[in-house]
Each structure stands twice: as structure tokens, then as C-alpha cells.
Length: 381
Image (cartoon, rainbow, N blue to C red; front, top):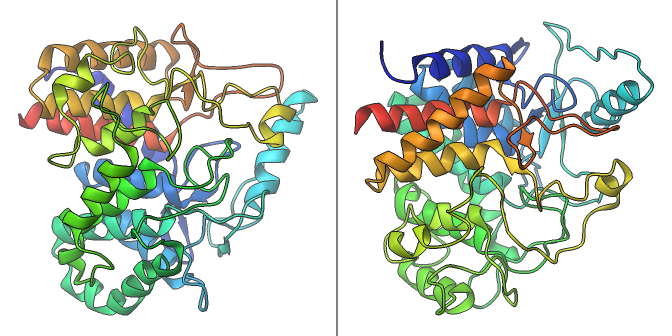
């Protein structure tokens, strides 16, 4: 039996549950309950994992729908797609659980989706466009679907053009609060996360799509280092002006040469967590009222994020830290098989998080996909 076969089988089964066929084709839900909408960010991060189990049709269809609904004037990619209301879905499941009532807000098999561009704070998703571009390039690399690329070439260019007026003279992207994946936090200004995604796109993906860069990659790299690099730790600060580091940014930086060193990363407290996945060990960003309302102030501050666990394991494999990768993968397998599902967030004991008003989403596509991606890397190296 191949090592971690049980984990691979469960991740495949769980993510397959979240694949839904609609009029537009096959789309991937972010989760099975409160996040049963088609969240753009979650889907895009899931694309390598989906491709690893040959779900090319799902990737193609979902990308096609996202590009179809790009805003005709603002060029923003929808934050989510839904047959109803994504915001109402989250509220309905939360309230229904609090009242002890089962709530089934199901999609009709042949219903059609509509786009949602902004969330409850009135902001869009700053990383949706760049993630859609990266996911598109990954699909083309895997499928060699030149006809799809030619059909969407203009829209892909528009998706990148969205960032032109979001940049300053340094060509760093500035973002409003609640607009990146840590959307429970007021992370406005310049984040290393968003700007590293831009650099990653320029270095590895822009040429695949034939997109003309808004800045040379080496100039952007230098500006990122000048703005975010912490000489004392060798890591990147979370935002310009911050004095703490985020794990997500370091994991993206490790995909790019000459940003941070692996040896500096493994010596950090971010790496050496007994239960991996906590994004930051200290974060001063204010928490949104929506999270405080359901006693979830720790959401992006203290909880263990499953997708970060999987991404950390993948990074260990690619940086020849196989022993540490096996420790993380074994822990993930133990947690997943214990619960019989793959969840969104966990507490500091590695248990599915739950309080009176909120329960960790299951099955959670983003983590399923990250497990599949990490296991593919593990078995291929």
C-alpha cells in the first residue's frame, strides 16, 4: 500500500462531494454547509489538487464561468458564485445551528449561478483576479488546451488590467480592509501576501497566458524586499509598517528564488508549531464585527488553518525536509481519519473547531486539494 493512501482516498472522496453540476457545467463548492457557495479564492487555490486527480473538466468549467462574469467595467472577478445568496447561506447555516434547526439551502442541479462582487464590508476580493490568472495558467500547463486559452485571452488580459489603478509608483498593490484571504481582519494597505502573489504570477505564469506585465519582475522583487524584508529574522513582515510575520506570506515566498532562505524559515516560531497551521503568532489587525458577532475573534489569529498545514507539508517536501513533511502528513492523516472528514479550522489541540455559534466547515475543498497537492509532491520526489 502506498504511504498515506488512506489520507489520499479521503481527500479525494471529500472534495468530490463538493463538485456540483449546474447549467454552466461542473463547479467546486468551498464546503458543504455555510461555505457551500462557489468561492473564487478557495477554488483557485484548489486547482493543483484538482488537476492531480484529473478533474480537468471541473477546473475548465469553473474558470470559464468566473471569466464570463468578470465585471464589464471594473474588470473584477467575482468573489463568489451562487444560485442564491452567498452571504445569506452563511447566515442561514449559523442561525439555524444556533436555534437547533437543520437548514438545507441546496442548489438545484440545473439552476444557474449569479456573481457576487463584494462582501458584507462592501469590498471586493483583492486576490481573486491574480489567483484566477494563476489557476488558468496551471490549467493550460496541465491540459494544453490552446483553444480555451485563445477563447479567453482577452478576458485574462482584462483580469490583470484590474490591478493597474491599484498600484502605487513602486508598483506595489494596495488593498482595502477585509479583501484578502484573511478577510476577518482589517488588513488594509500593502501586504506581502498580495504582492508576492503578483510576483509569483510574473515569474512563473504570465508568459503562459501571454499577459504583458505591468512591471518587470526583478524590479517588483526588489521593491517587495525593500518594503517587507525583516533583516533580523530573514522573513517578510505581513504588511508595510507591521512588526510581525504571517505564515502564508513565507510559504508563497519560498516558491520564489531570492526572497527568503529555507534555513531562516525553519528556525522561526511560525515553522516550529506542534500543531501547524496558525497563520501568525501575534497579529494586531482589528477583527471584523461579523466574526466578533459569532465569538470568532480568533479565526485568523489563533486557529489552525488546514490549508496552511497542507501547504507547509508540500514546502517541506520541495525543500528536502522529508522527515518533517512526514510528521505533518501523519498528523493530518490521523486528524482526518479520526473525524472521518476534512475540515476548515482546528483548535490548538488539533480538534475541529466549534463554539456555540460556529462550527468548522466540512468537507473543506481548499484543504482537501492541498493534501492532494502535497501528496503528489511527496510521491513524486
